[in-house]
Amino acid sequence: MNALTLPDVAAQISRQALPLDWVGMCGIALPVLIGGHRLQAMADAGVSLDDHEARGIHMSRLYLALETLETTELSPTSLHRILRQFLDSHEGSSHAASLTVHTDLLLKRPALISPLAGWKRYPVSIEASLKNAMFHVELRIQIPYSSTCPCSAALARQLIQQQFVNDFANKTLEHAEILAWLGSPNGIVATPHSQRSTATLTLRLNKEIEDLPFQSFIDAAEEALGTAVQTAVKRADEQAFALANGQNLMFCEDAARRLTTALAKPSLINALSVRVVHAESLHAHDAVAESSWTRGAS
Image (cartoon, rainbow, N blue to C red; front, side, top):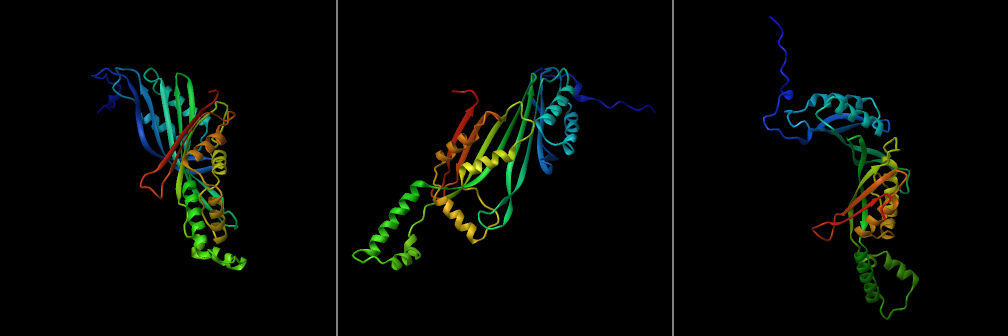
């Protein structure tokens, strides 16, 4: 008996002639190499379907092109090569391709005072696109940090002042007594509210960049914010963190401006967008600020 040729249904003519902006797969599980570390990732891969008569694309060709990511460092060069392979495998039917990789970076971060260190997770995405020979790579990074409200700090200080007046009115001030008061519950009768906050950065890389500079941007962002969340700590580290928060009061507007100023680096990126979310401990809603920067814009 003669072997039958397997049907290629995707090559059939569509009954409804209409081009499609994007066709592909989302949530593809695969390992990737970033900075020499093998990470678990999820990928979204696809191409445009410009041949309005073609019924579909060959998704298996996209899937197989991703195999090189298991052994090749993820970089603008490797991403461009894969997108070029996407289009070459759909020559005549597609002119645009995209690949987005979602993963978590694990960076070991030292404690503020003690010799302890621990791992911190940073969700990141790499989005690469190739359309009409124009190639772009964007990085998206989520960075957690702590923020203390300047308004609540001022209100707390006022209450502490009032408590001091109440406790020491018409009394001779003695150094030892004041020092003891400061260490008592009355000495901290009110505290400002702090919140776990998140900065989401989207950075479009310059064409000349040959790697994915995640850590340099994370380091710059955490330095600008001043109160990155901690991992392993001792009491001395917790005290240092409390001091840092008390000396680093910021609204979400302050955080967005700090990040935009610190990260707008024309030598590395063409564009930047910043979104900060302060998960309020006072309100049931969040405080949010956004900012953007484009190289060459006035």
